[in-house]
Image (cartoon, rainbow, N blue to C red; front, side, top):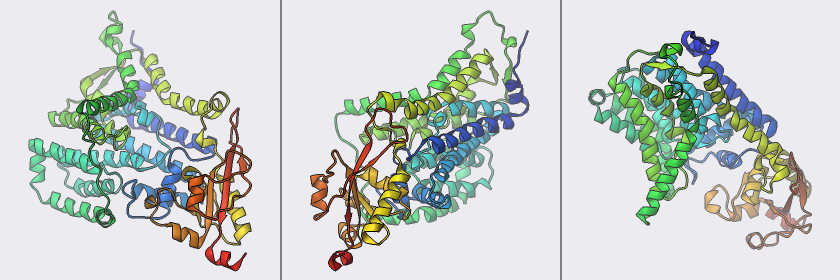
Length: 508
């Protein structure tokens, strides 16, 4: 006797409802978790905000759009990180919406839901990054580019040209790998008869004009700044191939959730079961061009960008895993055939939930268990707001002026930069070319705060810091307790004030 669960029936009858329930549940989960558990932003998010504060046309971290958006939502949230966390989840939801919408156009609504749910199990999406940055913003933009590219090439919708041009222009303002992705898209169009017919109109010329207008400020900055493109590492070819294989293996590991679901649904595990016993998710036949489109962009970005990354000697895939693995879920659904039998429904549901909830358990373990059993510092437990308020208040007490700049240890300086009420500028004194909005002379003129990790109660600055800031007088180190201290030592920060020149001359 056939048993069909309520979820399967809803997939058949209300695919859009199932999609939004799954996506909004996951987005809400990853919005609430960092808001409740993170006392300090994860990864390099504090640096992203420090760079975004300056509204530069470009930096050594790449094009500016992600940094600008991060600063805008941080200000709109009145200096609270929940605005940036919400922005990350909006990017996640828009990405999966574009995958679902593209899937509906190719395989129909029922199987499009399966494609979106499979995509959600990929590591880059089951652990949706709350560390907003170029890699996070590039995911929805690339997904929208593929959606409107299919509408232009596959469905001949001329109205989609304008949206496509805007999205490609914004992609150029987000990630340096945009040129590679657009070249892959152009290569697909040139390699197919329908794509070549599409390119014969005047629309590509107008699209190139719009893209050029959007990307022009960053291109001008590249020319004026003299920034050099990364050069390939002309080393041992075997080492490059080894790096290429390592990157591909890492990407394959991120697809473990999809692989387990496919294996669990394999009919070979239960040969006695009849095919008609399993509920079926139906789709109309897929056009050959659609199949080529999905398979091309499921494989080509991963292969090409992994090869380029290995060629440049990188230990990670340029553009981020979310971009290169975006179309794997739809590709699995397209390859599964017109009829997809859902065998062992309870097992499949359990595996999907585990793939979604495993990263949550990892975050909880890192927050509440690792401080008691490990020695590594948990960066998200550092009290950024407390640190910022303390140093901002003490700088004002000593100088009668608001804190305008902070230097020293890059990580601590970035945390003080977002935690202090005055939102001071961050100066990387060890690499001043990375923060061109401040120089050593400007820092000495306007004054600021220098922070470092102290190892004793004296808190003497490291020799390199003392050399870069002559006359720096250290204050009594300040000890900060992490949100969950466990068995780890408290954070001891050494600090010193660089008084503004006028104040120093006045003897205050």
